[in-house]
Image 1 (tube, rainbow, N blue to C red):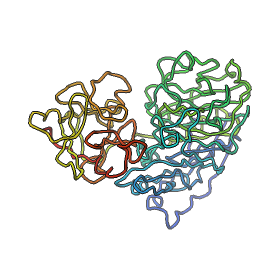
Image 2: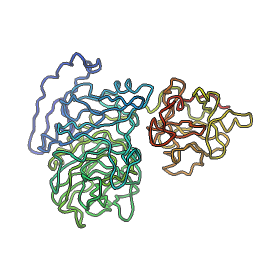
Image 3: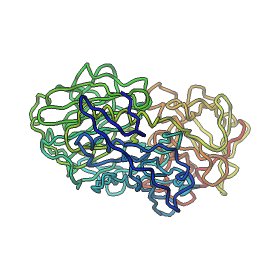
Image 4: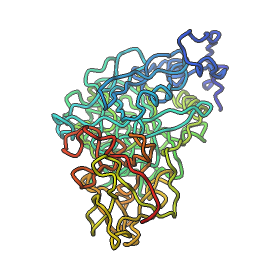
Amino acid sequence: MLFRPELAVVVVAAAAVVATPAPRPAPADNDSVAAARAPDYYGAGPCDIYQWGNTPCVAAHSTTRALYRAYHGPLYRLRRDSDNAELDIKTLWPGGVADAGLQDSFCDHTTCLISILYDQSGRGNHLKQALGGTFPGPDVNGWDNLASAIGAPVTLIGGRKAYGVFVSPGTGYRNNEAHGTAIGDQPQGMYAVLDATHFNDKCCFDYGNAETSGTDTGNGHMETIYFGSAKSTSIGAGSGDGPWIQADLENGLFAGITPVNQQNPSITGSRFITAVVKGEPNHWAIRGADAVTSPSLGTFFDGPRPNLPGYSPMSKEGAILLGVGGDNGSGSQGTFYEGAITAGYPSDDIENIVQANIASVRYAVAPLTSGPTFRPGSTISLRATTPCCSTNYLIHNGADVFISKVQQQQKQKASWTVRTGLANDGCFSFESVDTPGSFLRHSGFKLVLNPNDGSKLFREDATYCPLAALNGQGNSIRSWSFPTRFIRHYNGVVYTASNGGTRDFDKKASFNDDVSWVMGPAL
């Protein structure tokens, strides 16, 4: 059944739930022109639908759109690295998409982080920088990193641009003092829209209900959506090689009543997916679907709780997390666009209508690059623009990569063949002209030249996305897998560096110049 949000009429089984929206309000005087010209798309959001099913959202997070038809508040907060100024990004109209243009203006010629994901439910269950736990994060004081504001651009609702939350390893958000979330064995539901192509086999890319301490307090003390390909004798799995939608229930990822469930399929062939986990006393389910093409969800498991100690009854604690495990295990990666947590166990019919709503907004990929164009197959050089070093080029000697003036006999070592990105075809990889088969990649955030070993990690480390230069000269080239980090020269050596951080090469001084490169012909 397709859901037509402009009618806001829902039929569930034999019952009908009808909600008639009021006429769309006129934009306020201070609304943007885009808001004033917003399309006549005024209907229910996912959390309106859950409310109709008597399973209201107690947390609703999205950086792309409102999850209630009347919501016109902030979706997320930006922190600008150049001066630590902050700005809330709202929707363009009630029930609408994020104001990405305001973000682009605020972050022009600098970098920004997402510091808060606001809760739209009204309960104040905002997600902020995770403070670490059993496993410390990589930031100061063992906190987790914040996500780049530009790592996951998309379009939706008539082709309007928005940004998701690109979680690199070490990135995490949490609220250990959430209100209204399930505790103990109380029922709950969860959904999330995720990037089906961005994952790894580490613990744990989660969204949902977890421990309030950031530590492992025992089996059954959390219940979250997990997405990834983690697989071992003690970790759950579905069929094939993954990735899978599973539940992280603490001390175990579960694809069904036992950790391994061959009926839980690998997620392949989709760019965006909807993932669902829900649980009630001695009963739970995993569901999922392509977030763009499928009008309803498939059910991958529906049955009793795992037959191991501690999982029935559950002992949920009610904290909310994103991107990390309950004990702050933060080696995972993934991309989050929207999600919600409910009070009560939603029916399959209500979830199918939520899925139809998600499909109706038409998530699509958006360009990852800007500035001067890189063309696959071309051979190029990259010249530094910092005043100290504007006659130096990016060059290698064996595996070492640095900047230097180039002698006649070194020209091929400073020349690079542009290839389509090994990990993402919207970006690029750079193959050495004089050492075919070897590519620039980051290792420990130092730029090196290594032969392509064919691994997923290598492909990701060797993929870069050129942007219009932060200092206005040429391009700044950010890492695809760590979008807070850009190719930067520092004391003559080349790194993948962030605009401020715990390492010397992350210093903010001269960052914009050091990460800006002029692309020219091969030397």
